[in-house]
Image (cartoon, rainbow, N blue to C red; front, top):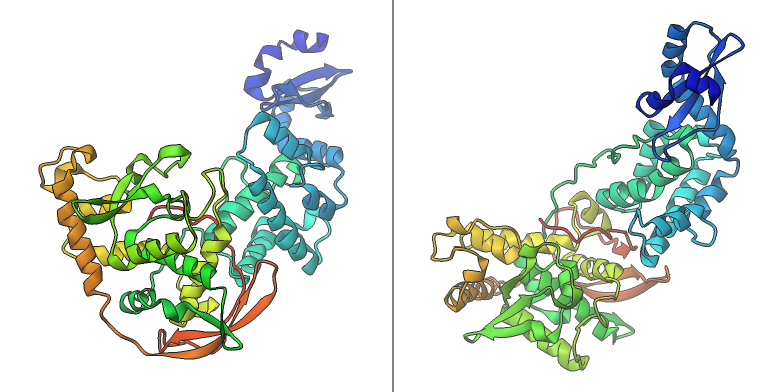
Length: 466
C-alpha cells in the first residue's frame, strides 16, 4: 500500500478500475472489482518501466488477466457436476447466497423447475454432443445448437429464452465461469427467433363447436369413460379463457364469490383480494359470462362440492402450469392438431385468450370496450360515453355490453361439424404414455395426420397480456 500511495493512484482506483504498482523498475497491475468494491488479489507484471506504456497495457490486458485469474481460481474440471448441482440447494453456494441476499425471486418451486431444466435438458445435451470442457462451449455454436435441441422437443421459444437460457444457464457463467462468460453480462441474451412470434389462434367456428359439446372431450378405454372429472376441468379452463379472456392465473385462483349478476346479466368479477396479485391494476374488471360457460361452472361447483376456491386451496398454491398445458393439448387433439402443428402455428393455452380478443374485435363492440374486457389499459376519453374513469362504469354500461357479448357468443355456437373416433396417446405426469379413444373433428387443417402422440412440452411462462 505504501507504493500505491506514492503513486497517488488509490483515490483513482474505482474510476480507472485498476491500480499500478512500481517495483524493481517494472510496473505491475492490480484490478478493482466494482461488485465487491475490493481489489482482486492478483498482481500481474506489465513488463515495462514506462508509466505511459504501463497504462496502455493495463487497459489492453485487463480482460485477459481477469479471465486467467478466474480460470485458475475456479479450476472447473467436472462440468457435469458443476451444472448438475448448481440448482440443488444443499450443494449450491450460489443458491444459498442468492436466497440470503434476496437478489433473485427463487421459490422452492422455481428452484425445482430450474434444476429440472438443467438436469433434464442441458446436461443430456452436453453429453449427447460430447462436450466435456468449458472451453468447448460457445455462444454461436453450442448455445444456438442447444436452442434447436429444445425446439425439437417442442419447448416454446419464449420458455427457451426467458427461462432456460437467461434464467438457468446464463447465471452459471455470470457467477462461476467468469473466465468463460459467453454472454453479455449486462443484458439478456436473445436467441434465434427470440422476438416472440405472434401467438396463433384456433379456428373460430370449430373451437366454439368443440367447447359447446362436452361429450367430445371424453376419453375412452375398453369402452369406458376415463378420468371424467379431470377432463371436465380442462374443458372448463379452455371455456373460461376462450369466452371470458381470463389469464391462467386469473382462472386458477377463481372463487365462488367471483360470480354474480348485474341486473340479471351473469358476470365474472376479476378481483385482486386475498393476495391474488393481478398482472396490473387494469386487470381488475367485470366480464360477462356466456350461458355455456356459466352452466359449466355451475356443474363443476356442484360435482366437486366447491366451498371457496374452484381450482386451488388458496393464493399460496402454485399455478398448475402442466394442467393448463394438458387442457390445451386435449383441445388441440380433439380439433385435429398434431404437436408439430402447435409448434408451427405457435399455439398454446394463451391462444384461447387471443381467440377471445379476435372474436370480440369482429363484433360491434368498440375497441376500448374490448380492451377493458381483456384487462388492458384504456383511454376513457375515447369511449365516447359519459364515463371519466373505470370506476364510473355503472350498471347500465355492464347490462348493455354484457348482453351484447353474451348474445354474440350464443349466435356463434350454432354451427355443426362432423367428427370421427381416433386413437390418441397422452403422456402423463410420470412420463408414461396412456392410450385412449376419443372424438376428433374432421379436416381441421390441411396437413392433419393420424399421429396423435403427445408429450408434455413446456410453456410455463404463458401468463402474459396479448
